Image (tube, rainbow over all chains, first blue to last red; front, side, top):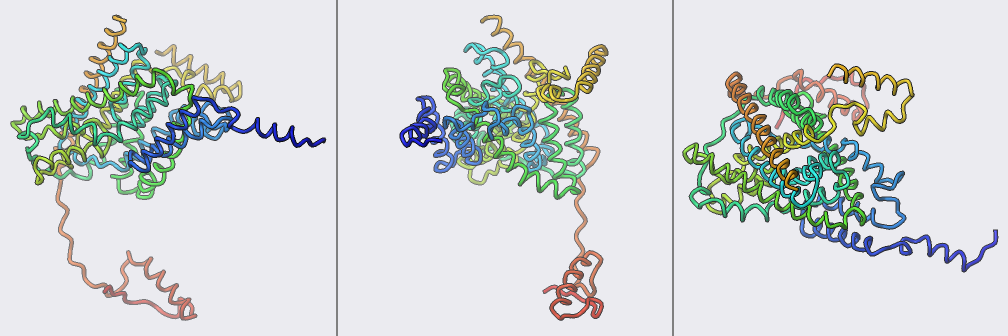
Length: 413
Length: 88
């Protein structure tokens, strides 16, 4: 083979990423660097923003094969976990293992605060429809108000996969900004007298109740909204690992190594979906604005329902705990504590706010379940994304058998 | 646009109703559970006596100490027996 220095140099130059670099790629690399900066130096949700930002950086390097759409690429492989709805439920398993439902069980009426905060999801849904999104897209955007990253990703990948990147980024960015977004709204909607209300100490809960609770929630909620079973089922399984006392190793793994590993995979996969083509659109700007609206209305809804509960209980509920109904565990509960302590330093609201905070997790999962029931494809066997891929690769006989089972199920319906 | 708006409002009202229904069912379930299985304070712990002989739960410790001592002394574990572990 004849070697020509000039030809080889030209070939090397044409195969560098620089030769393919476009304006959109440069802008997205800038966005990725901004996210990395915010994560490291501003401490904004660093566990998520750092890998998301780095995933975005990798995805926007031309010819790197690191975008989520690059079949055969590393991050495309990770992205299959998002596409097939595997990673968000595993995050929920870890969250369940980390969560103590004790404050919620001690004061179960705080579940209503978790429900009230979901108003942000639905006001945003209406706003998104008015801005021209269809119902599937509007549902995926609205769930940002649930302040629950894995739920947002789960719903977006199911109902509007083309909007996954901006939705995930908006959800996690606003979760990081909870300490900045919530306090002004909380102070605006409450009086100083209300903020000073001291709540009665929570009564202790039997360990047996703590063990039975996740099983009951799984049966009740998953029977009513089967579409949310992957999320809620895993959340409750993780909590059962924690409370049962007989699965110490599984509990420890779920709350540490598993959730950490899955967080890396999920965040990199989300970052890999932030390519210039998918992110640099007018829709992204609309989603960022709608996401902020969702967060603000959810906070206001929780606080206003807290005020209602305060009135109805004769002043025994501090309305500040209502803002924790937006989920974002445990940051939103810490914000309730902080704002309460600013008015009266001897007022300790943290444990009281943990009730609505974990109720918010259940509430946003239920809200997601409603969307899946209305717009998702929970019933047909072959239409499920994961099964459809499997069906495409298995033996024809098995495929026929699955089709027959689906036919029988259809005829029974 | 108007039809979409009305559909969105309908979905929102329906969904909020479902969420409140599910969570109210959970509230009543929790209240029934808490009533059926009330909290019982754990019995006060008995004062710990200094261990005069290795207990069954300390078998693992005895095994580890025996193996370590045997290695250190260059003897077989059968040649000696640990009868007492006292904690400072």
